[in-house]
Length: 375
Image (cartoon, rainbow, N blue to C red; front, side, top):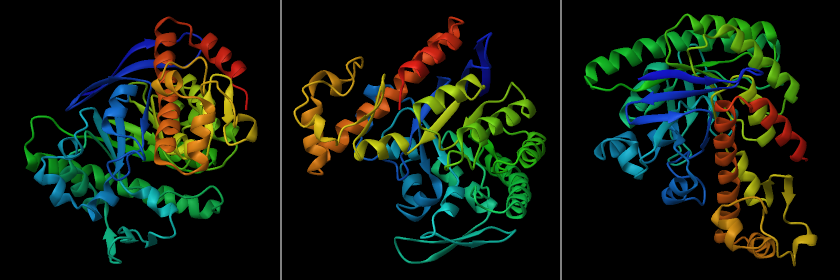
């Protein structure tokens, strides 16, 4: 288990790797649809399989409240519980610090959350979080981290970096201990999460401190939250200079097509985001020529597919006019069709990126895509 690089682009830092987990291997780069509660909104497991989504990510903290880890354990893990045979990542719940309806506060020991289902309060420590993710039995787990927002003061972000490093050490120690007790033949992978906002010195500090811990991979957190893209890309470049090339890099929360292509070119291997499905439900569609604003009246009688160059079943069988009609009337089928297309578009973008890297032509592919993809 682990990660190995099988191809590199000579003109960029793009690479193709193989992430090897206890339930199978997958080539990078890849995009993970977000299945927070074990379901991608309006998308079935069969839809995920047909679009070629080989990896998804769920939220361990949310699942620990409902249905509860005991339920998932009865099914011998999340894989069987949701009947998804791909690779499952779980996030720790650190992102929920971004939600005022859930987050109640934190200290050096852990985080206090509100249970939105039962109205109870939970105090999650790094150790408890590792137990949750081991019990859920995902293929790849994330450390519990403190995620600062871009608008937070530098002093607050310094504190977040310090706490994230401390929690990373505690997560790794407890994760190792729990896996020894479990005595499983194949182990769950664990990724550390690098924070630091858009401050170069703090990003470098966080990356250097976490690089000393023997994680299976590293996530870049706290970006894709509204900062300028040039700042996001600068942070990626800083992290890549610190983290060993032998380790996979995961950019959390990134789902814009151009953003993904730029990050792949900088050596990022994996992504996740609610962005494609959230946009789809509002009628913003990804196409080879940029975003299609489907809710505009110009498409009321439009007989064209969402994207004339796309070969997904939605584009083969349905018109813009029909899908627009469904979305206007808030029909579930409309949400499914639009969401399926946007997710398929990103899966296809990652497949094409993979192929271009292997051919040594990623730079050309990236430039052509960006030229065609107009906002």
